[in-house]
Length: 437
Image (cartoon, rainbow, N blue to C red):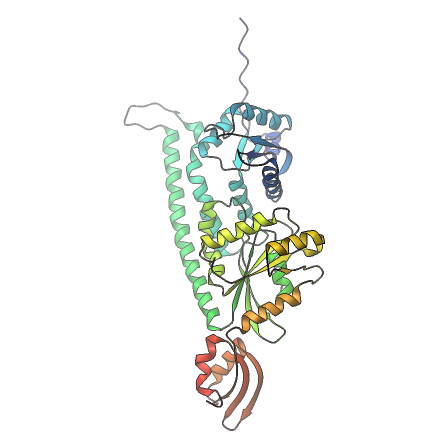
């Protein structure tokens, strides 16, 4: 009778090779019944781009076709062994799924694959958000989502302490006690982050009210991540918001004043980009950020023409807008990166989005057309009037200069004669001094 095969030695977490492997990954996409190979491949390509943003070395990828999910590994045992062998052959320590893994499935992967660490798309997105968050609100929102993601996964961290000591029915083992202590710490942290976040959200609401006192139309730029929203904001306003060719380059809403050719002004806000299979906890955590879109008078929906998935990206954006209560806002659709596609693609996109504007930050195509459309939006409730403001109405005069289009201003004995295009929000305040009424 032959001796049993020796059990593999536990991995040393301080071994340089183990550390190096932890930064090498195999990507796994899933193709369910009813899905085409092309659809699964496009999602896997997006996961590839997400993972690259974390600086992880990708050494291979594959698509697993499944009829139903395995409760143990998500994929069947045969496919699990195939993925595990590929990862070890490629000297990888990480397997990343383009689907959600349960905490139990993650533990099973580490146990059954000789130490491979398995994570999913949601964890990748969370890690990207952790590295990109800059403002206090974004940092708190990401921290809350990360803590909520960690809480059910603590058992994996303390499994080495399970059954470390025996005892009677009234005695707990060390691992269970330590895990419960850590769960309580995380719950306390979650409660504190929620309090801090509520305070920041209240401060943002105050800032929003202050902006609304300046009666300018507000426009939020929305769209799929990496569609070119920040570049559009920079092109229109001359600002220098970070605009990089990467997913989730901008997490924090940025508001800039836009001066239109007529002299009218608007407030333009760049918002966080949307993505398919966005973790639900992030949708909740970022609700305060997305409220910029809810509060806007108009939305600019930026669609990346160069993406083969542009229609699904557009549908994802519109779906999230519905979920957050901004689906009824007037939308201007901008078909961005028009310089990167041929006339056939442009024609197809225009037929799919009637009234949309073909736009290019590189060539300047569509800028005049977009400005003209924004002029139309800004002037919908405008009224051109001549005012004679008493000399003691300096505050109202300052408000006109901040929130209206002042065409002329001349001091007279009776006051200041002002010719201006006044938005609806200011008309009630200036009515008493309109000349001719």
